[in-house]
Amino acid sequence: MTMVFVYAALGLVILLLAGDALVKGAVNLSLRVGIPALIVSLTIVAFGTSAPELLISIQAAMAGVPGIALGNVVGSNTANVLLVLGIPALITVMHTSTHDTRKSYAIMLAGSVLFIALAFRGTFDWIAGVVLLGSLALILFDSVRDALRHRREGRAEVLEELEEPEGADPDMPWWKIAFFLVLGLAGLPLGADLLVDSSTEIAKMFGVPDTVIGLTLVALGTSLPELATTVMAALRKQADVALGNVIGSNMFNLLAIIGIAAFIKPMPVDPEFLRFDLWVMLGASLLLMPFVFWGRDLGRVWGVILSLLYVAYVGAVLI
Image (cartoon, rainbow, N blue to C red):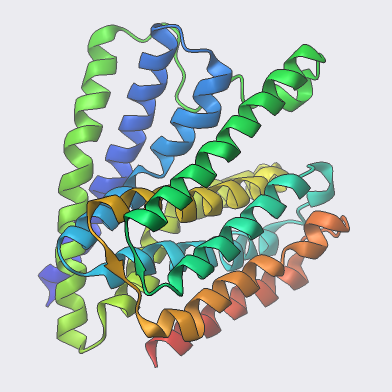
């Protein structure tokens, strides 16, 4: 029994390290071949940081355990709002009004509603994949257009973070770029295979559906990087950007990960998702409305509320 949990932890560690390596390699390769840093930030970094979740969903779909694939995405989105924002809010007040996330938040809500509507078809197949990826393409096109307009208008403060992609190193040698790419491309499928197989075994050992493991163990594990990032930002008094990061991550999870995985193999939707988990995910997203539209600060009281809501949700899933 112990070794199964060890393999699950090992798979998660490999996934996270390989995902980070892939982002570094892809970012610097793109910059070296002349792709503007702005475009790299809006596309390659966003896709690269979602690579672990994507590989898990693809591996789970191919292994015939779609509950882990869908549970990973739905559970991660719920954890991103309730836990990834809740815990940093316990450390320091997040002044969310300093960053305008209204447009991206509205898009995330629309994506959540679209995802739920497609789920009621009973399966995520290639048709759902076309709809999800088509929606993502439109969003990315709009984001690039907005960013280029801001650049023309000279709004440097809007582009400050986008101009410095994560892991960018203009002097990185070609051999190091190749090393990061190989490490990422080799490690991601290995980590995903280990985590999915061990998670399936854990589900069998405890007699719970694979959906439950996807919503809890796998989802929480793949949300750890976001949690670590926001906690460190809170300790540095720079947690104001956490809300925007969560919104972007949730949007990519719904549209990109399931959109791509749906082309690999159709994924039937567990009826329990339709009765409970999807609505919890949407409800958690709606809780952000006061902070996005009305400029409310995300303080310790809300941190306690969000964290306790996540604990209650996990308890409800496991019971």
